[in-house]
Structure formats: C-alpha cells, structure tokens
Length: 533
Image 1 (cartoon, rainbow, N blue to C red):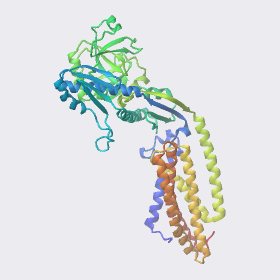
Image 2: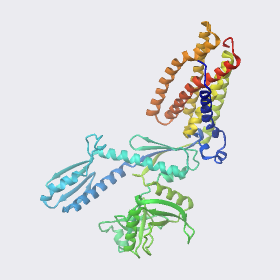
Image 3: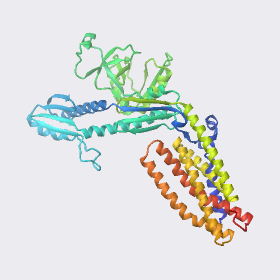
Image 4: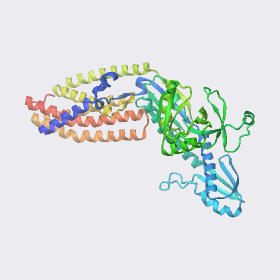
C-alpha cells in the first residue's frame, strides 16, 4: 500500500529532518559552533587515528598494592586487639603475613573470632566465590594473618577499577574531549587522548598518585638522630621537595587528616606574594579534625605531604577552624592548576607507571581523512550513476534516501557525542552498501510484480510489501552481530559496531518509510502507467 496519511507523512519527514539537523555542527569550525546554543553544539569527535593525540599504557604497581594491603591489615589487627583490650606483643609484618603473639593464653579464643571477622568473602556475600581475603592460623599463642592470593588479585582488580575512575575525572577536568580509558589485562590501563598537543601535561596529571596527608612535625629530634635512624615508634621520616630544599622531616605517622576529606581544591594566587597557590576545603569531619589539631599545636609546624614528599611545612600561627587552607610550594600557574585537578579527582589506589608511550601525529590522521573522503566521493559517485542508469527516477529517489540515511547516522553520532574512528568510517561505508542493496531488492520485487501483469501502482505497492520481510530478516541478524561486536569488542571494534548498528536502524527506517513516502508522492504526482525500471 502506498497510502500515507498526512500525519504519518509529516511525522516521517520531521523525524528525518530533526535527526539530520544535529549533523550540521560537524561541518563548521569548533570556534563557530561554540557560539551556538548549547543543545546545538553536540558533534562527533574524531578519534585518535583521525586527529592524532597521545596513547599511554599504564601499569598499576602491584608491589605497592600488596604493601598497602598488608600494612592496612597490620593496622586492623592492632585496632581489633586494642578495642577488645587483648594484650599482645611482637606485632610485625613478615612478607604477606601479619604476626602477633597474644600475651595471655586465655585471650587466644577471644582474639581469634575477632581477627577472623576481618576476612571477607571475595565477590561479596551474594555472588561470592567461596574464597576469603585472609587466612588465619594460630600456634601456641602466635597468630598469623595472611593475605590470600585470590584476595590480592581481587584487590588489584579494585585498584585498577578505582584508578580508571580517578583518571576519568582528571582527564575530564583537563578539558579534553572523549578520552578513551580501557583496562588492559589484570593490571594495565590504556589511555588515549585524541587531539592533545601537550603530552607532558597529560603525563604529569595521570602519573601522580595524589595521596595527600597532613602531619604534625616533630622538631625535638636532632639531625644526628635522624641520620642514625633513631626514630621513635609512631613517627616517620619524609623528604621535602627540591623546591623546599630537599630537607628531611620527622612526622607523626598518623596523619591529622587526609586528602579523602577534601571537598574542593582551586588554583589561585597568594594575596601577599602573588605566587600561585592551591586553596582547599575540608568536609565536616576533616574540618573538625584539622581545627582540633591546630588548636592544640599552635606554634608548631605541620607538614603537607603529597605522594610521600613534604611540599610545605608552615608553622601554625593560629587555629585553623574554618575547614579551609592553602598549599604553597613555588608552583608555576600550570603546576598549581594540575595540583588542584589531581586533588579534586582523588588519589589513585596505587602508583602507576608508563610502560608504553605512543604519539600519533596529526599528519597521519589528516592523510587518513583525505584518503577516506576521496574513496567515499568516488564510491558515492559510482553508486549514484549506477542507480540512475539502472532504475531511472526510482534510482534518483534511492540516492536521496541513502544520502538522508548517512546524514541521519552523523546526526545520531553527534547526539551521542560519539567518537568517529577509521573503523567507524568503515561501518558507515558498509551501511551505505546495505542501504543501496535494500533499495535494489525493493525495486527488483517491483519489477517482478510488473512483469507478472499487475498495474504500475499495484506493482510498486506489492514490491515494497514483499521486500519488507526479507530486508527485516537480513538487517535483524546483522544488527544482532553488531550488538555482539559492541558487547565483547574493545576500542576500534566497538567504533565499527556503533556506526554499523546505527546504520542498520537508519537503513530500515529510510528504506520502508522515507523511500516509500517519496515514491508514493511521485506516483500520486505523475500517475505512471508503466513502471520506469
């Protein structure tokens, strides 16, 4: 049937037009698009292979994860025994095991269940694997609490997941568009930032753990005692940064407050010296702890420690009870900006090192774009000529529908702010082939109906109806394949699956609504006595 109600016809035209409009920003310079309304600024982002950029493969420090985990376990054991007033001696770390001797034999049955409660099922209670994070043994009052290998692996997985979230926050704050951050194996993360022209700043941002802590400084120990390592229990030694002279500080091991209590960090300038600084603000708990510590230690220095280095050690002139403060450290403006970004984004779960760095030059991307444009123009011209030569006026209509189809793909990709890569372009080109093939199938059905003796209008209507089932079957199975590619694929494969999947949907829409509508309008206008194919 070639009948369309006015409402249905308007709905089809407006739907196609509305989606195509969102493709327009891709044909204007970014500076021009920025002056448009916010809703009209959505556009496709060219991938790393099209516009160049930086690709970094990062490795999470597994030894640091193990060390952090076993130290946290030692602190947990100490806390549990103290809370339950169980006397102990010899609390120490041996490899991946925490050892402690319970002083009174009668307290061993009391301590064991408390320590066993520290162990958690891997994967949670509902979907757990039956394995636990800790293994606990006791012999003659000596308790050994060991980290299990599955527990360490689970912690590594969590560390990588947490690192990916932190990296996303930092890269978004950098102002880059559509960075790609993917897990690679058990301990690696691949970061690709298209269009970035300052890889050093990227490395500075993502290479910093950003573990921030505030400690009170002990000034009673002399340089000789520090040099000889005679540091009392509960204290640590940290070096100052090169800008701070590289001196050594004795700090209370337990921090006053940590970066986890920060709610905001902003770059700025010191009103007295005009030097770049970073202003920060604590949450309620952090502000309370910081205010209490500074009230009790007026006249003493406290250290601001970032990734194990003292970046500043000012003297507390008066209690800081407002929950805010500032960090100064001979920063440049860019360093202050970077520090504010990493502090707001939170600390990485463990240090990460760069194991592979690759810069993709914009020249390679431009060559690819140019070659792709030439290939697309030549291919499109040949398709247009072929369709008109074989199907006449219906070929012209098919070409219009295919052009609208491609514009709709661009419009939907723009709405999604999707990243367009070379495989994505391949998906679009393949979609064009499928769209043309759908029109060819419809027109051949029309030709068969015409040869069977039907009238022109009946043959055209029957051709669309008979082709519907075949085209739907073909596109549904192809769409399923695209969905599977998207679900199990990564990187370039996903880019191909996205454009291909969207193309299949728009192909079905244009073949059975837009093409049919235009053909129906032409039939109503020309009233053909024969089928022009």
